[in-house]
Amino acid sequence: MVTHVSAEAPGDERGALLSFLEGERGGIRRALLGLTDEQAATRPSASELSLSGLLKHVAEVEQSWIARARQEAPAVKRDESNWHECFVLVGDETVASQLAYWEKVAAQTEAFIRSVPSLDDTFPLPNDPWFPPDERVSMRWVLLRLISETARHAGHADIIRESLDGATAFELVAREQSG
Image 1 (cartoon, rainbow, N blue to C red):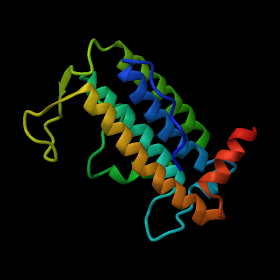
Image 2: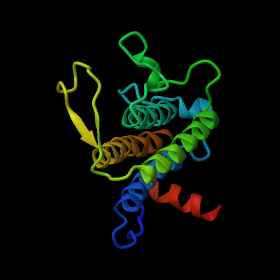
Image 3: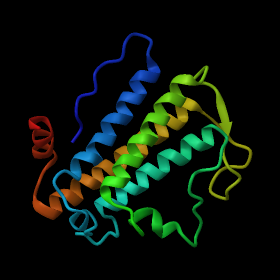
Image 4: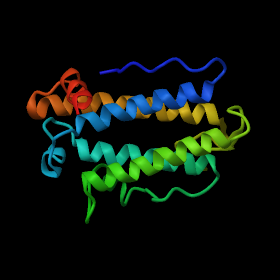
């Protein structure tokens, strides 16, 4: 469920985009309310997606895009050998640890975006086969990419949560607001 995102201050495009990103993050966080790690790892549909896997994925994707925008390597290098691990908790990873990590990533995203001179500034996409060669994208583009990625998975999270215990986004928002 989409929650209301307050209007930006006049001329605050960064603030508006960051607010929309945070609104979509909230959809995924709400979907996890009141679940154990075992429930969050459940895959109630034909898909391999779970709530904990979506959480890990969106945190990792956000970190990796902001690292690219900074022209740094992502914290986790993914390829065919370990791609499956970005959708499942491994080792000592927990929902709580992934939520804490994502909170840290979100703070880094906001600080970085607020620090760049212009949303029109660009950075090169990696030389991976799924990107056009020698392509550059803007800071605005990366924010829009993160919003769309997070929104898509927030929708998945709504469906997964409702499939697990019948809790709808409306009920989860009410739970979150009541404490």
